[in-house]
Image 1: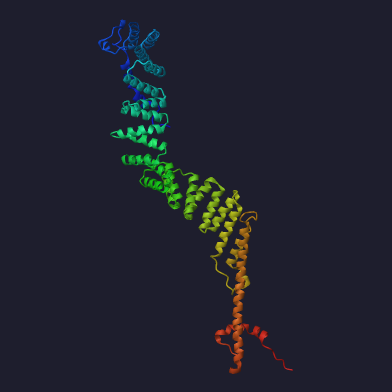
Image 2 (image 1 turned 135 degrees about the vertical axis):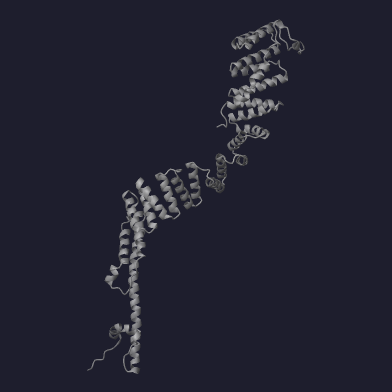
Length: 502
């Protein structure tokens, strides 16, 4: 991955190469018959053309100037074949050769020719350095980014001029070669020297810090960018991602929440991220409200998957009443057994046992776990018994059997009996059945206990009346205890000894 297009900016940077190379071409200084110009007459010894070489090179130069590069190259090759060329002649001929290849867009041969010009040994140090810069530029233009960048770096490290154009070229070349560590120091120089700093400067630093995993530096750059371009949502997204990747999820959530509340988030993906954040941080009700609102606004697709998610969020928030219509719609549209079971559970939690039972039975018919479904049906039936009036011990046995609470308990037992014994809920169902039956038995025991307590109390009152008879002359019970007279006959049969006359 690279920040810019593969060659657009580099081509622009290297466009000056043609001018630089044109300056190297031998024109008036190479004259026929080896006659040198006034400038050449003052040149150091060994930096002049012989008559034979000068004549051929002059002819080649005329062809090149007329844009007849192939013909000019043929003449240059003829010159190179001459015996006893001095280093200066070779260097100039190779330079002309390289310039011609460059004009023909043959960068590979051009580079080789310029390297030959340096190796020939006829150039002054500054001339060789200038040519090395041209070679580096051509390597980069030829797609040999790393080799060209290293050549340009070597030139600068040896004391060559560090021009702003070279710095920018190095940055782009190392980026193109995807050697971001090499690009970074040059990019920082480029960034620091830029005045005014443009978006491209910040974008490049953000790109490099991101690829090198330098999150602290990247965060600093992104902060600066947000201050400059606060309306750019991509910067806020990048900031939130950095926070999340750095383990600062809550801060990332705050950024996303701020963007949402500020109306900056429009895409479904961004909106769903906000919903997920609210859900993740145990705010299912808020997540549900956002999801519902955005579906109603058409910014989030209203499909069965989203409807299920909405109902799930309402259920997590224990907002079963709001979950029910969503689940009804989702279940009806998809026909999924699980959704009917979820609907049954929501209805169960709202105490709507009849509707819950219908939903659970639909779920069972569609293949859902019968054990779990019948367990909830039975539990709902049992919970309905708590709404019924309790058994009164004064009721007759027939009245107790006909009481609504007795029928409700029996209905719950019948539902628990529907739970398959092979189900993981089977054992729990049996425990519930035992519990409900024990509950009825406990009522019977309570009534028996209450009756026994009343009888024992009356027995004591009756005994007291008999004991007091010797003082009052008759058996007498206080009017408020007259109910005890119902037990007198039983008391007498148990505790009074009948005296039979002989």
